Image (tube, rainbow, N blue to C red; front, side, top):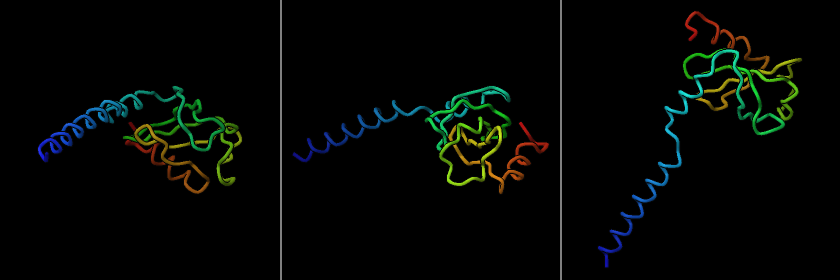
Length: 121
């Protein structure tokens, strides 16, 4: 009886492992695809502060696994506070294709100098 239970558990574990691996894309593939966008190109990206789940954004800079994107300021409707309310655009940093941080008045100089220094990709 213990043998049957052990075999069942092993079989169930192997089945779950293959099912999980089949549903999750390879991280290196997703990262490579996201970084193929050149500066000035557009893409629909997930943005937590937007009026819709995905927003058409324009890529500004990239460096290593980070990329800087901008979107029209009127798409950002639920940011908690007023510090990112740009007149025309708001800027956001993505890391490995996922939202990382919002560029605000407090961090904008650091963010832009990170992307624009001489080591830029």
